[in-house]
Image (cartoon, rainbow, N blue to C red):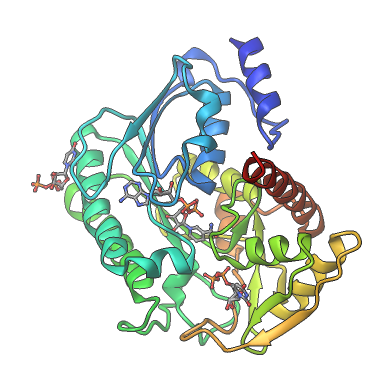
Length: 344
Ligand code: NAD
Ligand code: UDP
Ligand code: UDP
């Protein structure tokens, strides 16, 4: 089995040198909703490498079979094509509930579906957790803070969200998901964990998902204009995907039950970020343009990670330079793959 894992590992863009193969008694059956997506598929890799049984549930709205296909045929792996808005009856010891579009153009494309996924879908997963007695981790977001009036954002901040704006389907959907989690915890004694995830990037992001990292890198690799929305003075703080996965695993294993920010506190303006990416792509001739601002775009975002540091002993390890370089390498490969396929 270890030999097989080593072979599979070789095919994956991400390496996890710290992952330990667990003993038989420590292995669990783990359900990952949204496991064919960007973050979910990296989490699945680590769980599989640890030796767990993993069930991925995904409707492929924004995810891809390709992200997990290296596990197809493995006896510990199961893939269920299912929309979690509908009930699901499986058995599990733990549930990572990640199913939801995450990129603004994706979630705005079908706002009603985004709300249904985060409300009805979350009720179904909490119902499942209740029935089988599983611990469930809900993937929430920094968007619960909206366009924040407090900076950086601690978990104690209640947020500043426009309930009827274009981002509301996602922001309010996730806020309800958190409320549902704590209602099930209080009333039904469901064992919940809530991760407030800040902007995350890395290999397996969709080339056309419209998020800033994928847009800027794809533009820089093709010498196209780098499109800054608004004046570029808005800020974000970017976390590399392996750091986030590490945080999710640590939170799931911990006894801390309140929401926890998971993100990298290194903050940049979007204008700076455009230049950082341009400079990391050798020979890039892109120019940077500014354009119309996006409605309700949060102006500042940086996680206060004191809670995670104190309670999980977690903080990000991968620098922006290293993470971006790996991500640029991935996008370069994606670009040559699509160019090759288009020429066939
Ligand atoms: P992603 O779009 O790559 O993955 C989401 C996955 O969920 C996809 O595979 C998609 O097909 C699946 N999905 C969506 N609706 C579904 C449904 N109704 N039933 C079954 N599957 C469904 O996004 P991601 O970046 O991997 O995000 C994963 C989770 O983390 C999401 O819940 C997102 O809100 C949260 N999050 C991500 C970020 C980030 O920067 N990536 C930031 C904050 C929060
Ligand atoms: N549910 C599910 N899988 C399960 C158990 C429940 O999808 O294994 C769904 C079920 O359809 C219900 C929801 O989760 O609509 C909430 O479950 P809960 O037990 O809270 O509610 P009830 O069944 O009492 O309506
Ligand atoms: N953005 C940009 N150009 C792009 C895509 C995004 O300037 O091509 C900006 C966007 O307006 C926001 C920031 O980059 O201020 C992050 O956007 P993203 O969609 O990645 O995530 P968000 O944090 O807004 O959910």
